[in-house]
Length: 58
Image 1: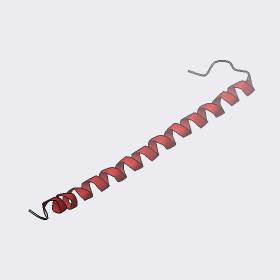
Image 2: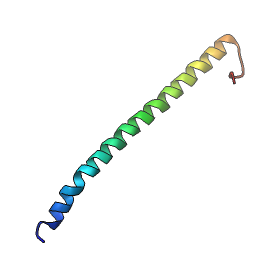
Image 3: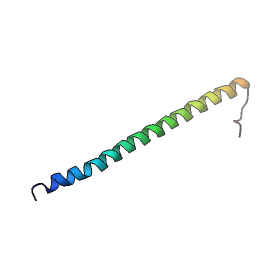
Image 4: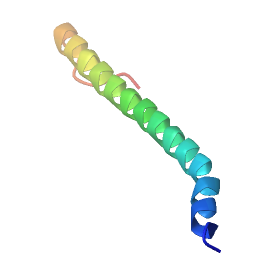
């Protein structure tokens, strides 16, 4: 019974670490996509303004 909690911790550690790595990777992908979409919409708005178009293309 002395090592029960240590064994429980060691058995859960790989799952927690893999889950944390997955979360960090997905978070970075989602943030990169969000930033890319924001920059693309800004560039598109600048191009529409340069061409004199008021409405975005649908």
